[in-house]
Image (cartoon, rainbow, N blue to C red; front, side):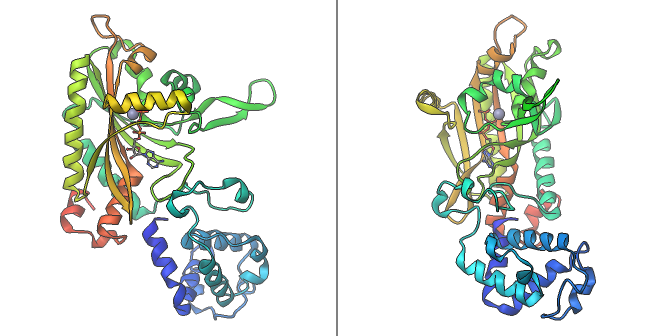
Length: 381
Ligand code: ATP
Ligand code: ZN
């Protein structure tokens, strides 16, 4: 759920009737009571009306998601979920007590351990509705048009990647705190870390492909992947699972150095055409440890990474896109040989699709049908 819907839902708290209607709308889900919810009396026993235990769990999860609350353990019992009226009263009490889950004040570190056993919604893990997804489709199509003149092919990558590729990319050593691993059954017997890790950056999927014989020339590909990063905080827009759309270009050092400047200005005007106020900033990746601090400052002083920042919430300004000039880092790691035998350079332009959606909602409101006609036309909505 996005923050605007949460705000709408939470603002219902002071109107008891509205809260009741909100709970009724949850029960009106076709998988719970459907149309019968509309005529159910406020104090009628929902179990007698045919709501099963599993459906009560579903109601509980939806209430927590919609109001960004966690129902305390001692309230998770049948009495709390007896009737629409009782649920509405309980939710009002909890909403008044709790700040929204996943939005610690000022991005304070999230204490996952203390609530891990009871939490039904993980911070930084969000779903998108059909309407949200139509915006993302519009963004994808618009980006595909924007780079159609240079992108040779587009790939959709899975949320997992070979551990060996991630290692070659240098991710586990530079960002061990962000890496997500896949555990599972091992050949033979037992369980443990598998040969896969979660995708950390969409572009990692392309380097093995680029290194193949037929890709030796200068080229350009785009890719989208669901990425995982074990972020320490969970303010709006800082997700642990998010979609990244990237354009990756490789070739001779001079070409790539020039391309990243061009990519930056193309991306900036595209974002501005969407009506977003964009700030550009030289940036660095969050490398781990003290060696990492050095890498980060080198990256910043050499201006290898530029971010384009936009407001994704009140007072929350985040990178919605970034350009990274990798120099020969991936060329060395993956053997991106140029026709003359020299090591190829690479750069990527990455868009955070989920953050773009948040930035657009921050700019135009949560009601997508009410967005300005020009923006809706641009996104084919
Ligand atoms: P590299 O090539 O150095 O591995 P990258 O360019 O592929 O990095 P980043 O620059 O770290 O990846 O991230 C790209 C974009 O993904 C960011 O500009 C942002 O929009 C989005 N993004 C990154 N982290 C998050 C997150 N935790 N939640 C939501 N979106 C994110
Ligand atoms: Zn990248």
